[in-house]
Amino acid sequence: MAEVLVLVDHVDGACRKTTSELLTIARRLGEPSAVFVGSGFDAAKETLAAFGAEKVYRADAAALTDYLVVPQAELLAHLVEKVSPAAVLVASSAEGKEIAARLAVKIGSGLITDAVDVQSDGAGGVATTQTAFAGGYTVKATVTKGVPVIAVKPNSAAPEAVSGAAADEAVDFTPSALASGARISAVKPRERTGRPELTEAAIVVSGGRGTGGDFSKVEAFADSLGAAVGASRAAVDAGWYPHTSQVGQTGKQVSPQLYVACGISGAIQHRAGMQTSKTIIAINKDEEAPIFELVDFGVVGDLFNVLPQATSEVTARKG
Image 1 (cartoon, rainbow, N blue to C red):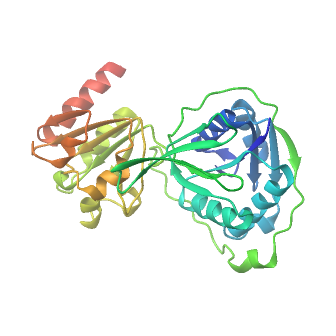
Image 2: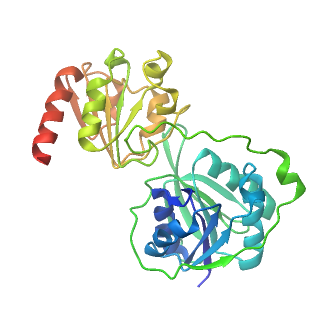
């Protein structure tokens, strides 16, 4: 069975949920082999083994981690040449997509980004599903040249725990001089809110123009569900919420199990960032709001009346 390379998405060895999702997808295509770059491997090994990684290619040289993404793309190209994998999977983050694009160029292969589903095509190939043109179309695509390089959106698969050996193999690899053209001079951790990462959260509650700048009810409802908080472009542009929380075509794209839009009209710019969500609920005073064309459940009402009731009900049921 051919190996499937999975670039581990982690912070100092703490694997993000995207890694377990990618390993789950990799098992559909072949034998999962993780590629771990950086420090903290001992902390990550248990997670990698728990989600089926049979082998781990480990590279922790400073030359790979002190610079931007080029060294990682070169490392993956080196491994592709070495093991001839069935596919290479990376998380569809800004960094992941850049690594994937550079890798595809280096190995002369086709590239698919923002895949929301990845399956074997039954003939040794890889079949993917994407959304395109602001979510207006569903696209089925396959790579027709070289080793498929696929960037997969978070929440595209439910992580399935399957024991793997996670046998680690140190990779002796030195990036080219060109890869050291942009060095990381400083790293500042983002201030933690206690809520899950927006792009990885299973539940997202977002607020828009209808909040009038008061996100307290949106945040309270999100916290009752253990959800992330997002915002529409209108709310962000008004300075009501940080740009890092913007959901939309020019913000972050999310695909949670549940998306709750509060006071958001549903302009195409916002829909492009969230309409691959599994279940969508909208709360809006305007029964003609475009968001209602998209939702599974809609509530016509004032979010300042609806959300406190919903929060109380959720809290009571949890208690």
